[in-house]
Amino acid sequence: MLKEVSATRFVTPLREGGSLPGLVEADDLGTYVMKFTGAGQGRKTLVAEVVCGELARRLGLRVPGLVTIGLDPVIGLGEPDQEVQELLKSSGGLNLGMDFLSRAIGFDALAHQVSPEEAGKIVWFDALVNNVDRSWRNPNMLVRHGDLWLIDHGATMIWHHNWPGAAASAAKPYDASDHALAPFGPDIASAAAELAPRVTEELLAEVTAAIPEEWLRDEPGFESTDALRRAYAEPLLARAATIHERVRTSQEGTK
Ligand SMILES: Nc1ncnc2c1ncn2[C@@H]1O[C@H](COP(=O)(O)OP(=O)(O)OP(=O)(O)O)[C@@H](O)[C@H]1O
Ligand SMILES: [Mg+2]
Image (cartoon, rainbow, N blue to C red; front, side):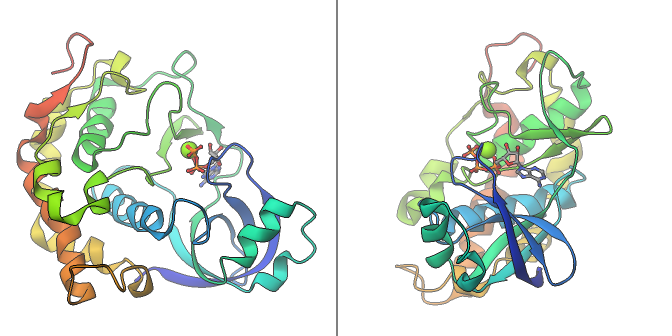
């Protein structure tokens, strides 16, 4: 279960994000980046954030802490921006929050060095969850005090948009040629040797247990939300064993 907080103030929209996340303060005095259930991409984006964030954290990668944020749309009434007003109005109830990393800056491949070891772990993880959103154009990584943090896992696990084809989709290779860390000679083989054995059924059960129940309800083809939680775990378990053999990259030395 993720920690539950309630939004007390909407601070500002974060304009860089395609899904228009917002900065909010909550009743635990924390400040969070909030992703709205009412955003165009829908609740599956939020499920993907939870599964990937909680999995990455358990594998020792740096990801901001996740919480659920209860939102009373009333707090947005004073919001002058029409688009933000609408988003707040349509997002009453549970939303996703991530710890706001103050003073973090966006990753820049020209300004930051990443070791082949760390790059390998991140590329391997992105291959595992089929993350198509960590390219050099849009790295979705932040740097704070010299440390790399992973954010934005909404565009992963494409198979959850078509469950009947999930096994076939998850059997496909991963194209890392555009990956923001491809130029750093990621040591994917070592990362796989270290991390793949840790992706067990037990670990994935723990990870999928963190998905809020109401984001799983009414998925066609599933008789229970527990069955759907298991469906999230299966492709990841299958992929963990062999995905390192199916990472495509045009860079040298990154096999
Ligand atoms: N935890 C965080 N701490 C500080 N800043 C953050 C955090 N999460 C996101 N941001 C900032 O907000 C921006 C948008 O966040 P994010 O990439 O998660 O949203 P998005 O709408 O899914 O983005 P896009 O689809 O455009 O990649 C990030 O580029 C970053 O600048
Ligand atoms: Mg982003």
